[in-house]
Amino acid sequence: MRSLRLYKARSSAIVVLAVVFVVSLTGWARNHPENATENLPVPEGSTPDMVALGARIYHGQEGGASCTGCHGANGTGSPAGPDLTKNKWLWSDGSFAGILKVITNGVPQPKQYRRPMPPMGGAQLSDAQVSALSAYVWGLSHPVSASSAAPAELHVPGEKIFPESITSTADGRVIIGSIGARTIYVLKPGGATAEPWIQPDDQPTLGIFGVFADEKAKTLWACFSSIHDVKQPPSTLKAFDLQTGALKEKYPLPTGGAFCNDIAVGADGTAYISDANNMEVDRLVPGSHQLEVWAGNGGFGLKGGVLDGISVLGNRLIVSTLQTNKLFAVPIGADGKAGAITEMKLDRAVHNPDGMRTFGKDSVLIVEGGGVGWLSRITINGDSGQVTPLKEGYPEGAVSVTVVGTVAYVLEGQLSALFGPPDPHRVEKPFHATAVEVGIP
Image (cartoon, rainbow, N blue to C red; front, side, top):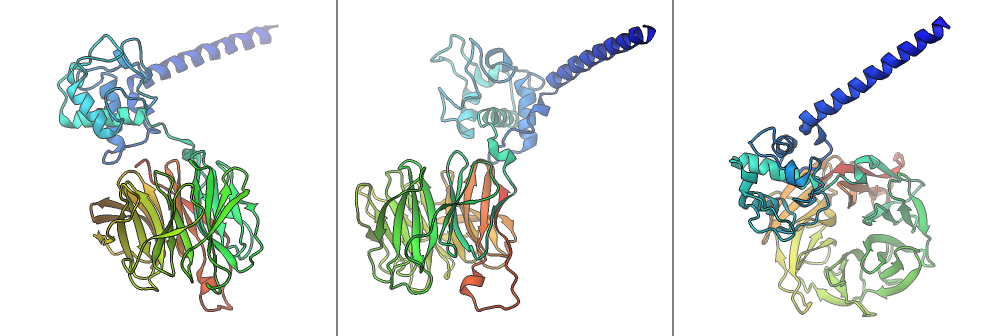
């Protein structure tokens, strides 16, 4: 009996200590709001330290103003002020610049709330403090997606797969096209191992090159081209149902000797296709059943340059040439017609630029298969581009990239084993794509 009473007394003491510890820890966290920012995304041009400073300002620990009275301790709003975590904005577009402007100028006549917001919350904040607070509010409205737990590698099991292109959907599904296996593979959201999805067709000489997930049209576009003889059978763009994988339609490229390489889709649903051999861009207008030549006629250079990566950025099409190491911009007119082709001036040379994806409003992500291999971001301003290497070191040949949440996956194709001279000493390595954290543009 004495032992039981002693056990109960000790248990009660442990419970009391645990409660005291939790309460103390909660109070400590409340007094140190910057410790809740480690998982918040950071807007471009800011730093994690700025976000942490913004959290202290928001909670009234620095700067002399507290935002919690109207927007709540967690930014989820109150009867006096809106929720800052839902990315729904009454006075700005939700960008970092837009949030900074609202904080600086205040909201003298709210649309949905009775209490006005004075400039800088009624405090006298420095420019650095306003920027920090804006970075924190931006982070609250851009919660980290499931990509924070994204696999470090995506695996494509099998031999002689030779994947060439990778694309993804908003829910995190990843799709990979294969030249060697002539199969389209899929990975479920969060998955790390690809499974065969769309099986080979009846054209054994056609491999799968570019793939592009067009969620608006519920279509997976895929380029089928011959790796042996471009004349027979013809290179073809195929449309598959994005959910079921069922073939919807196929479109032979319009110019003889064509090579369907990659695909991009404009805001109006027009599909643009790079014809690597003929150095031209074809297009498929929504509702049409036939591809047509849209741009080229020598504007991208002579045959042999290999027109490759392609992306729509605003009202322009950006394309790359694999062999001549160039990028070009083509305006998309209001009538859908192509404007004058312009070679872009880059601040750094690119080395065999291959797959490309739009990244934000002013940038593309591009893989460079030459040299040691790079994933780079090219920020475009007019006809100029600033090349920022994000990661280097892709010994098996970077061929394509896609973005899932805040992670870019770079696909290596090992294509030198397919197109290069035979190497009896070569050991085939597992086919994979590797993750690179790129943040939110």
